[in-house]
Length: 66
Image (cartoon, rainbow, N blue to C red):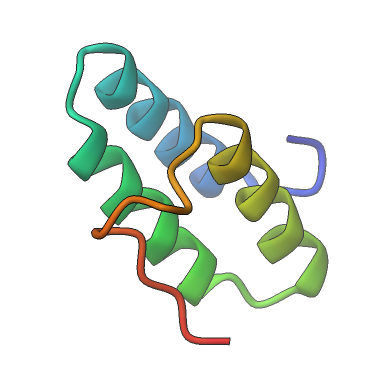
């Protein structure tokens, strides 16, 4: 998570915590919102890698417009 700013890192931690508690929908929505709002390509790639690592890209709540 070196390419993410502090606010994005905090949001990712919250989303991963939601995932670990079993709320996969909230994690998918949070990460997809972060992906859509990221300004830099490197940040988008980093967030997408996290979503892939947690298998959230196939979740119906993970919506990105690229």
